[in-house]
Each structure stands twice: as structure tokens, then as C-alpha cells.
Amino acid sequence: LIVDQGSKVNNNHAIGSGGGIYGKYGSFVSILGGSEVSNNSAYNYYGGGMHIGKDKCSVFISSSAVNMNSAGLDGGGIHAVGCANISILQATLSGNVAGRTLLAYGGGVYAQRPANFIIIGSSVSNNIASVGGGIYSTPKKEGLISNRNCDGKCDPPLPQFPRILISNATLLKNVARAPAGDTNSGYNTVLYM
Image 1 (cartoon, rainbow, N blue to C red):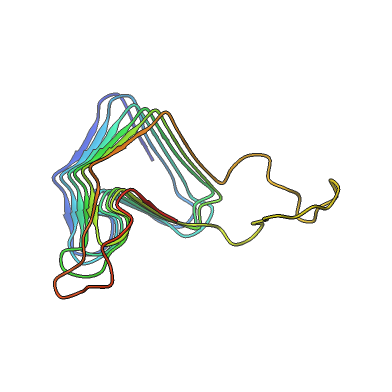
Image 2 (cartoon, rainbow, N blue to C red):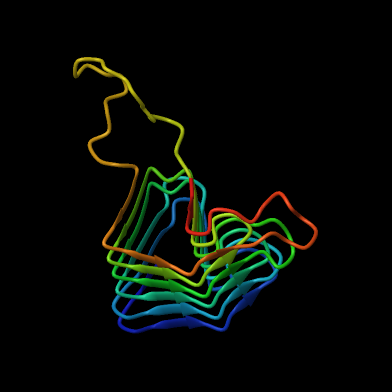
């Protein structure tokens, strides 16, 4: 799916996942050229703005906005599960909310097991969730290597670039708040990994 040239995916509502966009297994979703995904809701489930899921999927957002979306559970703006690549370049993610009353993760972005997650020159601000108000990401378990010296003959090989890269980005005024009556959450307002 390509949303381009100032197109708008706005004011949509789903009882299930993916208020604005729902991408099934292996989906490739691009939001480009001043387009926006705004004011959408996934009332009871995941991905107020978009839900992209289950392995070999990709999300590419460039010079566009994912704003003011809400999800009943995780991923107020973006909910991406098992995607190979998530790239957010010169984009805005603002005012997204994950979780109405329940413990929920990733107000702006929920990224579960991404192989590569890149945010460059973007703004992630004023998003709300119980954990990871701005961004919640769990690393891909396969191929993670730490403190390993194998003289250039590693199996699997050492990664050539970071799994998560945030560069020249603004992460500002995101909020991690505990749901009513819960005193064990409400932490990591910017990034939870």
C-alpha cells in the first residue's frame, strides 16, 4: 500500500485492529509526500493509525504525519509486529494514545521484534501510553549478539549496522502514565526497549 502526494487517511474507526490502515502478513506500507494518517481509532485492539503485522512486513514513512490516533491496546499511532524494516524519515508522530484504561505499550510506535528500526530527522512528541509513551520496541531475538569476539568468523555474522537507530530526531513531551489503580507501570516516557 502506498499513500502519497498529500493523501489523507483520516477519521476512520475500527472495533478491531488498524483504525486507519490494516496490513496483513507480509504487507509493505509506505506513507509519503506530505500524506497523513490522523484521527483514527482502533477501539478495542491495536494500532489506532495503522496495524501492520506478522513477519516480513515493512513500514516506510517519509515527510508525512501520523497524528492524533488512538488504540484500545498497544500502538496508538503505529502497531508493527515482526516487520523486517521500520523506517521513519522526516516525519511527525504526535498526539497518539495507546490504551484507554488498560496497561498499553507504545503511544507513538509499538514495534515488536523489528529486524531494523530507524528514525531519522523526525519528531515523536506528545504521545501517551502506560509504558513507552513515545516508542516501545522489543528487539528481534534471532541474531542478537553482545560482547562476542569470534575473530570475524561469527555464526551468525555480526550485524553491519544497529538494530535500532535514532538520529537527528526530536523526542519530546511523551508521557508514560499508569492506568487507574495500577502503581507498577507508567515509566519510560520516551523509549522503552
